[in-house]
Image (cartoon, rainbow over all chains, first blue to last red; front, side):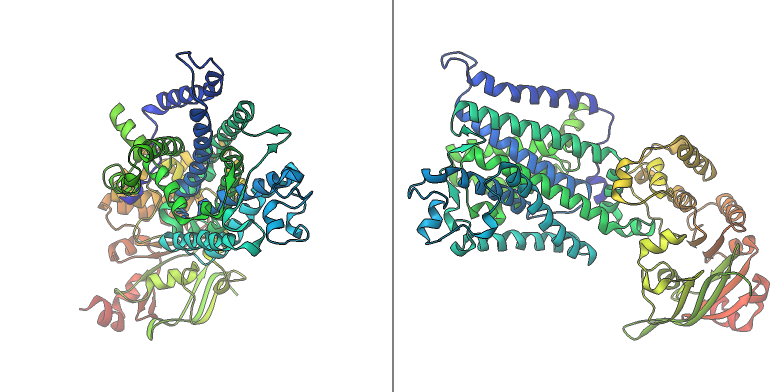
Length: 364
Length: 245
């Protein structure tokens, strides 16, 4: 029974209409920065707030997609994906800090403000290279990938699955949060990085920077969707579903389950890292709070609400839960955590296949 | 020396002081069909677990041709050419009959190879031939979850055929099958043996008789008797512990 709950949405209805809705929604999304340029009194004008908030949600949707690939297909329930997202964010944050140069409060030619404040004499060795954008992007992908590779290898080889793996990943993100809170780590302690000035020669906090980052995120979302879709439709996707539903049976067919799980876990962490790298320049800050276990759990709830094992559901979940969060935290901030918990319970009990499941049921 | 495909010598498995296998020795030759019977708890499934790498023996030698199986994991053993059908049919419920067979089809097993995999005409024909063989052609695109128990047995036998193994371990293949299906299964196993070795664990003595093969009787983790079905049915020790008459 549990297998059928987690099954990918069957074709039939709606693969066509679902695709049309998706394309329509993405086109609408792509229009937002254009509508933002309309005169403020125009009926179709979209505020700066909407553009920046949807740019942020797009990066959340990419994170959700990464989680869905690992959880919805391979059954790897990571409660620490926020860590990979935050590491990607820190990598680009280091680059943004280096670009501030002498424009910091203390006006030091190379050292970021927090290092001057903490009495650093020179840049720590692990900061070298981050003055180059391509290196920072490479690190935003490679560091999460490497970490996922090490943790995944140890866990999957020892056949740690299910809730035990979830606890390990949760501990991982918690440990990283504590580590990044420390001033002597060289990552700005609890203040993290902020006051960014520019990226790739364009001043941040301008409409053009906002729309560039927005489109870059949208492009990454499309790329990630294409990649995950390719995997899901390939034989690898079916092997992953088989591992999710009957891991030991897959071994008896001669598949090295560790390799397959590692492949998808590392790839998923890399996608999450890239998403984090696009998130940070848009929100203008990264601090250890991004590693908080709650963030990772919230991201898993997006996927559960949207419908796991469907990819599109992850997008739907990320956008709808975050829309709800933005609205609710304005009108009744105290209620948000109750709403989030209640949502998760309700979805688990009444909508095991998420919003996507609801739609395909309605279409029948 | 005749060509032994599977060679077990002095194999013991001890779980918390309980001897599931006790100094078991068994030789299966190339192309041989062998039936294994025995009362519940005789160690039949544990023996299969030891051969396929699920359980490590406490002592003894387990060899498949020249390979020492006691050091290998399940996937490596499966790739050497040992296929297994479980007592309780186990397959992938979210996938269709066709997809289950496609996963079992002998092909490179790595993640990248699976990602780049495209179904060739030849592979499609092999899958269709096996679906025909196990009578599931009409269900090709149904999910395995909705098959009946007998059809699940057939699908798992089909998956075994797709793997193209040299040695097939078949655990209670006819449980839940009608008489006609049981006959069909016996005929199929007899046909398969010859090019491959087949070890069948079964309770149904009529079915074992239909196989017409050499029979090994296990009891309390060790071999009690071996020979033709008539021989073992008349062996007083077998009558005492198993047939109980």
